[in-house]
Length: 270
Image (cartoon, rainbow, N blue to C red; front, side, top):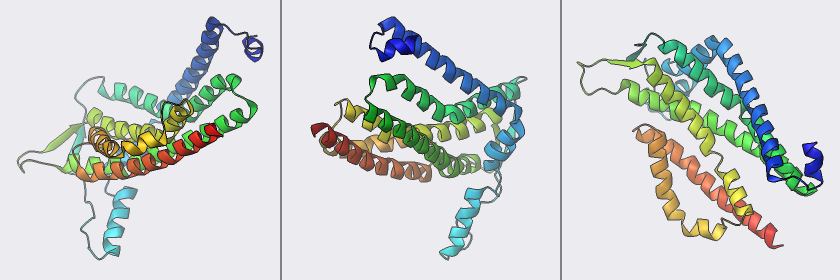
């Protein structure tokens, strides 16, 4: 019934809220389902994915070592065993971490569907051609999110773990890191990278609404570089290599976003 009203352009503000509510309900259900799946397969989620970065056999560490040998630097970039152990210090610590981590995994897995629900919500207000473009944006946003997640997981996060896990102020001090701290570092850095990679999509919508122009982005390019450096420092731990790794793709995405804004503005002028 609400869809019929929507198609006829007769929806009131309360009708829109009702439609939005069901979009949110469906999104929440999908997140919960993926969360339950992640909760059930805890061995794969923790041992194979998250805690894998603690092993010197992790893919990123092996690639750095191979690259080091390739350029003739020997074992300079090879990373040995982690100089820390993981501990749990509260009675319900591991169970709580299990639930929270499963929820984060659920959100990550459900993200493409969340974009799809956003597309379904705005579709009735779009023209036929715009609907096709919007569906393409859902795909593009999903791909950017996946690329960001993979980049964060395989590059930014493991280097952060290496730096913070092996850093010591004295040989007399041993690193015993809480499980919650380790998992929080890995999941937060990885998830934020996925969200940050949505920059081109955000720029597209802002340009579409006339709130952003390529001229504005070019004018404040230098400011954007400073903001990017600050953002990278906030997202990543105090490790220069991780900050540089995140800053470079962010600057590339910014330049790509200028091109996107230019295309949107040109199309609007035509």
